[in-house]
Length: 170
Image (tube, rainbow, N blue to C red; front, side, top):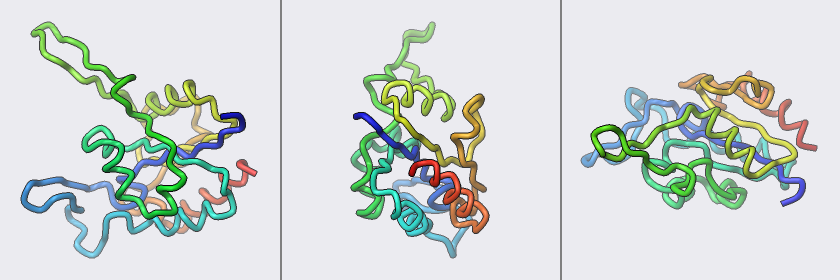
């Protein structure tokens, strides 16, 4: 795709607080935030992306590794689903390796490393990653919007930073 513009999107710590737990009894839920909801910040992202119809989303969330791309995609509201073109994690690129005990080990790269590898594969003309972790991003810090792990993009200051960074996508 020539002229590809990509927003790399994490879920936990971006679209809702990072304290997500998954149990057989209760399913996927937020831990320690009874007044908060999963994907509560999604409307803010939908609004921020509205002026940029050519911006695509690539999921860079552990939800894809844990539950699969289709599951993660289906958790998003329809306006965000329609923008999704893939994920940074794919079994084709993240094959297990054998440790000395001859069992499969799935190395988990730092989020920044995983996104950089995807940028290398897709070669977007513009890209921005929204994440709550600062691991593995250097030297591409200008392409990253770090969020507070609890407030995510629901913080007024972070939402304003997102709008400013998206201006580069025009």
